[in-house]
Amino acid sequence: MGYRIAVVGATGNVGREMLNILAERNFPVEEISALASRRSIGTEISFGDKTLKIKDLATFDFKGWDIALFAIGSDATKEYASKASESGCLVIDNSSLFRYDPDVPLIVPEVNPEAIFGFKKKNIIANPNCSTSQMVVALKPLHDRARIKRVVVSTYQSVSGSGKEGVDELWNQTKGVYVPGQGVASSIFPKKIAFNVIPQIDIFLEDGSTKEEWKMAAETHKILDPKIQVTATCVRVPVFVGHSEAINIEFEDFLDEDEARDILREAPGLMVIDKREPGGYVTPIECVGDYATFISRIRQDNTVENGLNLWCVSDNLRKGAALNAVQIAETYVDRVLEAK
Image (tube, rainbow, N blue to C red; front, side, top):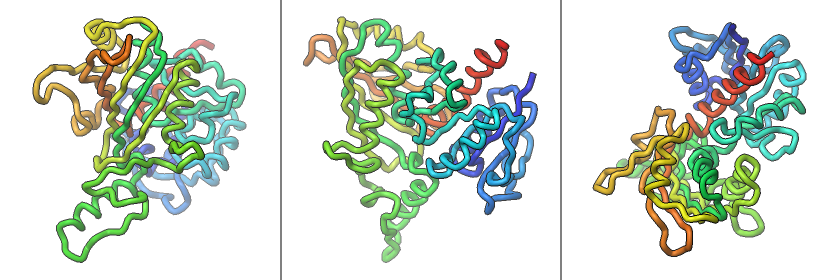
């Protein structure tokens, strides 16, 4: 059986990845539509071995469509998501608009697939922030074994997390370093990103944290466990694709690093590459295009009673956005539509 699928924001980085992943994973598609703003109408875009033409989101009728994968900003989502959901089409939204709505489930399928049934309240499911998605996939199996008390995470987030404009700014500023008089001013990021790191992602809040840092705590609480204390420092780095995280975990019970390594090797969505030798770990450039979240540098933290450190890397356009959305759609098909 196939389903009618709409990809909203199909010309953007995440929308294109959604189309690629739907094709790669042989999602049961009967019919697919690629939607974007009016200025993109007629633009051709690939879906497997097919070519789709962009349709106008503003005039699209969602009635009779099964699932809409949204990859547009919160403002546009606010305008069109209710139009789709009220037409009977399930919305899986990648923006931040619905993530903290108590009537909208926030799902990472490896972590809380049972939350899928919460869609019935608004016919909407939210996709988490990219930095949260990869972290909770790593935390879940360890939490099941030893119960996590506290997480201290430092992120190293690529510019693609800011969209195509962020990628272009890094590219142009990098070129400008080598061309006298061709420096490029910062417009997407608060400071120059080329050959630099910026300890700010999103706006500052009253307590001095940024909204990105707040998101990681709030979303971990909603997806995994509200009792886990989370403190984050989120940093933008001059990497095109791939988010990295240094994660320090404090458990209620002792967890040996070797047992943790074995647990993570068996967990869904994870790939452990952890050799204590030069290059025996994964870096962002190596994770691009891969489905897995990679775990390296697993080691005991002896400064606390039950501590562990690890390094976590993932393609933010995939697991952090497009792949997770498609996995949510797969879970919905398997647990809801096929169960009817």
